[in-house]
Image 1: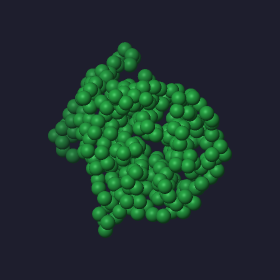
Image 2: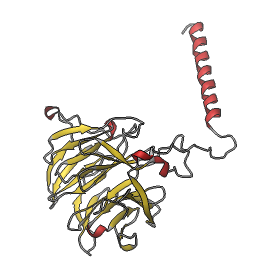
Image 3: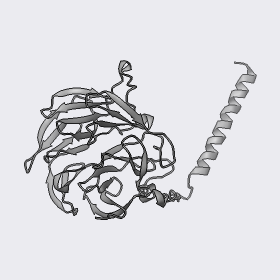
Image 4: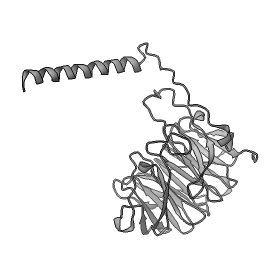
Length: 327
């Protein structure tokens, strides 16, 4: 290397170092106090279709999933158990299932709880039994039970597996297949979820593309919709939406991470409105909001279409009801 080249390289390094130092000084509070981060602007009230009606504490120090079953019993997965609450938020029972990350309850009241190693079922007042051993390395981030099937979203393999009620694999949904014009799922974070609508179709998050994809249960692709964007009508980049739930009329409830917001879309992707805006979900007090992404809220829907939001920061279930129809 010539002397001129060496000099240029040294000057370049110095410029980078000075810029880095300036950035540190500009973005860190030298007093040691946590910087004051302005809250996000309030959501346009014309877009807010729901209001918060109630809340209850889960009693957990970590939460991972929520589901609603018959009788509007609410199931919440914590780090060392699954707790069951009645429709008033009062605890009913506790199930000894450690490490559950995803929950689903079918129309008969059977609970499906997925850990990293296996899926448990709990029927009636019985205890947990192993329904399915998972392959090594699997990471279930979403599970739902339809009339005849159980659909399991595996973030590790980026696929949704459809099982019959005995646990036998029927087919896969969402895996890349050029011959069927399926591009495949992308999920840089653990944000792969699935829901089955009353139309019998599977709705799958594809957060790497900021979209939701629609399939038949046999795995045939039908549609993909959603646009990235910071406007509340779109899905905020990147890796959104994270969670899904389905209202009784087939509309979808979505939940996003980062700037958390819970919204409603028509099943064909038309934006309907907002359940809860990001102003309702401040970051954890120990986290610098400039650099940390707030996790997505977990969502579920009960028999009267109340939207239940499991807040992973406050460890509470927050209940939202449609304006004008408070219950």
